[in-house]
Length: 196
Ligand code: SAH
Image (cartoon, rainbow, N blue to C red):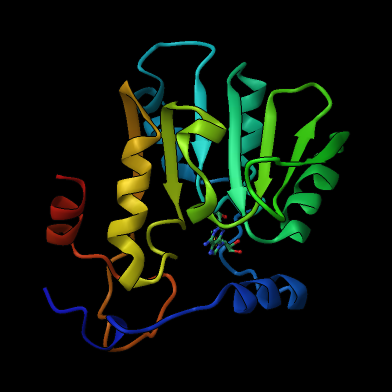
């Protein structure tokens, strides 16, 4: 498949921060994502007390859903504003601390301890900092990554997965010559070659 003009497009971290400042966040779903409800069993496979990862988390309300079901949630997001809005909008008290292994990074953690959100670039994380996960919810994440960074992103995700973990991926399908993205169009064939 042809991803045309999107191949070389780059959205900088600065541009993402600006989107949050301007309230330009059409990607945020206040009601949560129907596909997570639909495929929840595929993610959880009947298991409880899982560690679930939210790459490029924004202020996704699904983090609250999964925490309320008794799972441990970890997210990563470059916008501190997004993370503060998440805790504020769910009236969750939290504390914040630096992350010794990652210069400039902060960890915002709910006081109850089951939601830890890292404010840094996804590319600064590794399993030595966040551990490994039983499940990953990838919505607005792979499709938001710059096309040139996809391989690096997916390789990192694979290193964060436990042996029996499940990965739910949401993509969008449209003519990439008609919109510049994000969300970017990631063809099915590319998903297969990226994840193997
Ligand atoms: N997954 C969320 C947000 C999708 S929008 C949801 O479903 O609502 C993509 C998010 O990724 C934005 O909030 C943006 O600030 C963040 N982001 C972009 N590049 C990033 C990077 N390199 N590391 C961490 N977060 C990033």
